[in-house]
Image (cartoon, rainbow, N blue to C red; front, side, top):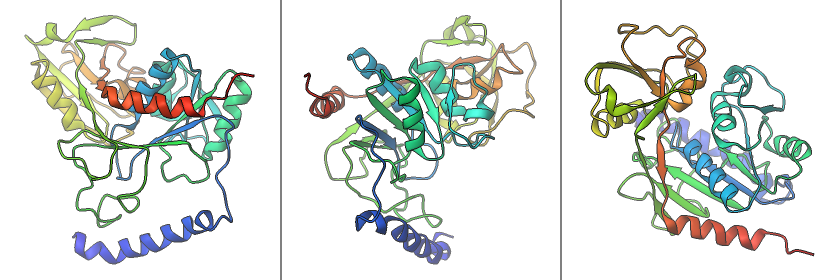
Length: 317
């Protein structure tokens, strides 16, 4: 099948080159934010863990004395304008990932098709912001960036071919500030390449803010649902790390809106979901227990990031 689709991949590569050519020749330039911009993205289609990395960055920067803000396209939303994503925003209005980021990061979040418009609106509304994190946007050349982080899951680059014959959005390898990879083998020989991993936390939370130890669910049948790029990884963590017995599992399409969601098991059985899905599932199932995966990034990564940002920080007058 991949070989049959290879001609379309060559066409895709040609169109990609035409898109990049004006930027390469200097006829077009990415919009300048006026403050440091960190882009968290990937080069493969589907999820690779960008949003957990964005959340970890926001927390680290805030703890380090920065005032970060986040911008995103807001994939899957029904609106098309530039707007702020708030903790109580409907995912249909801002996108499920920006809704999660607004609720979990504690920093201002704006969405727009053109990221530079989101940055401008963010800075106008929140002038204290001194660094911007772009959730996704590695291929969005219309926004200039100072730091590029490319995230890979354990699938790496697959067969190494461009869409649709392979998973790549653009040719790889390409220069980036750092590569964060979840698999044992890094998909690039060029440093800096840094391993990362996700683990299942000990607790889950429901829409009322109540918390429960996942270990307390081991003696009963559990229903699990995930509408993410790699749902099997979530289910595996629940069973492998927390010892849960998953009586029913539902792997739904990424960005699923849960409007027609129906449980497979009994209503009295615990329902467990990902943190990303909770912002939509809680509208009809507030008792669902949301699990926020914990991301571990190496100390070398934080040292590299802090060094790059310190070089970009304006000198005091």
